[in-house]
Amino acid sequence: MTRTELLTSSPELATRNDGQARPFLERHRRELEEQLAEWVAIASVAGDPEHADELHRSANFAAGVLRAAGFPRVELWPQGDTVAVFAEWPAADATAPAVVVYSHHDVRAAGGEPWRQTHPFTPVVRDGCLYGRGSSDAKGQVLAHVWGIRAMLEGGSDAAARRSAPPVTLRLLIDGEEELGSPNLAELLEQHADDLACDLIVYSDTMLLDPERPALCTSVRGMIGAELTVFGPERDVHSGAVSGPSPNPVVDLTRLLARLHDDDGRVTLPGFYDDVTTPTDEQRAEYAALGIDEEWWLAESGTDRIAGERGFSVPELLWARPAIEVISIEGGDISGLPRAVIPASATAALSLRLVDGQDPQVVAGQLERWAEANAGDIRYELEISHTTAEPPYRTPDHPAVDALADAVRVGFGVDEVGRMGNAGGGPAALLAQALDAPIVFFGTGLVSDRWHAADERVRLDVLERGAATLAAFWPRLAAAMR
Image 1 (cartoon, rainbow, N blue to C red):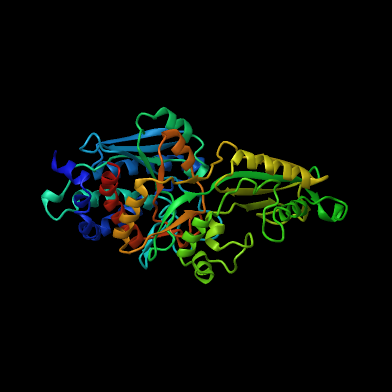
Image 2: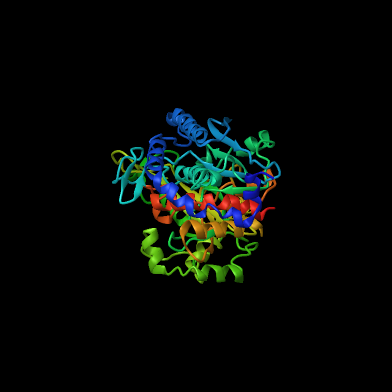
């Protein structure tokens, strides 16, 4: 047996370089920061034809970073109108487990509220944070993996402690359209099934609760989107000419939206809660152990009150209960000079967040029945995004969970690692089904990182601790899965 194989097969030797990753990352902190800034400066906005070239530039940048880190195989895979990045680094031991790491390089548009720290694609570092679109969601998370691998392989204090290959076969898949709901990911997974064959998936497009009390994410909510359009007059009409008897689609739409929840904050779709199985007693206990108080949450999330379904704690509402959110409302003169008209239509975008037991397509039918029952004589159109719907996913019992929890203890320097969920969604269930492998979650995002909002940022110290965690994880995983 070679020295590399010994390092990956012995739990004692698997921890040999634990003390070396952080010094290595500290020495290369400036390089990591500059690399992330250069990548964030590429405006890889998903779904915008004007940024199509930048999505390709972003993929090429990621490919260059992976090659420089030592990955012997790096490829660009066409994915709809954009491109995904694939990289592979075989383990020295052919019998070692194979792991697919999933993340993405596309970002959300930077419109809406003004950016005050910097231009969205002019990254700047202030007070230990790097600001810019994609810094946390999810380019920083990809680089945490790259530098975690480098710290594990190169961080040994002497030549004998260094490795020439990872203790597991690593296969990175960096999605190019995650922010659009990954509409072409299923086809990509089918086309490259052999390249992506694996024993485990590490999903890195998620958040930590608090870097001072890190918790392991063990679930993501599912989601399905919809657009509800309400119609009024046949065309925009001067309000002074028809005000009073004319139906107003903005008013009708808001009345409908108000009926989505009852006075206790419960969603009113028929049968919406019939299949919900969470929170369980075990989950309640895990969430309570995190010690999240409402005052801390309000400050962290930048809100001024707790809303939602009554009778549940903030963690339960975030991770174990379903919800419907109104993402946008459009109607009337929303830009330019006002015309004093009653608009012909008004539209609301809805995001339905689902939990264990719920099926997105079943919920879609519930939404259709709710609209029909509540619309009355209001003319409306309901469009549901069936193709980008995502079921919820929960990590099963697996040796990787304990291995990752132990690595988090090392990377973050803590004694206890809790359990949490992810309030958002993603193609976790699709990946697990298509690749026939379980998923564990690890990300370096924080609620205060302002994903999808103005002044998105990433805490560089958290990114560094995340990389140290991943450096500790791979040898532990190899030992645990033997």
